[in-house]
Image 1: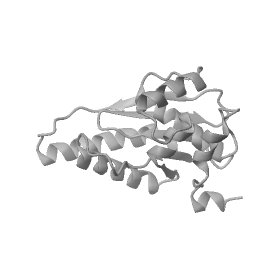
Image 2: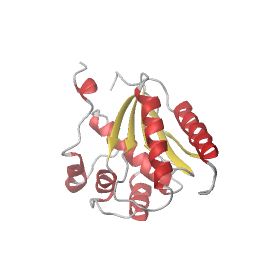
Image 3: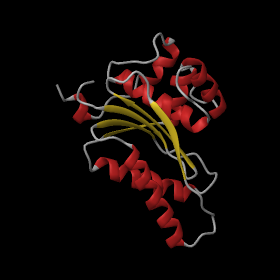
Image 4: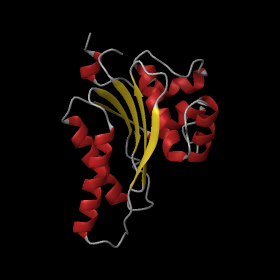
Length: 187
């Protein structure tokens, strides 16, 4: 894990992005949310400025040299400003990819299965599982729960799990997940 200074979990949202940052050598992660407000009917320029501001604030919260485990888009989702959420996802990905940070997108079903053992688990089931599994981490809602689970996935993939023991069914969520090629090739 020495090539990364931190492992970060990101659960992007237009209103409450969950973030969990586990710095190397620290006993516990920092967990919080980054919020934004807007309206569906806002003019295009206003919506762009909102997304640009939000993406910049998210990037500012992610340390350099971090492995960033970011929830991948939910392609089946049709609720709430899907176009703007997609725009935010790509803005954040683009800003992270051009830096010393390494991005690993993780499907929502993988996050859910790692947390609960079921890939189709609800957000509230993930929240309940995360609160039980990580009692010393300040999880205060669905957004921070998802971010903590994503961060835990990153730590496990790097060989520094924070959630041992973990049931085999939960671990099977990672069967098709691997570190990006540039990380796996680094000694």
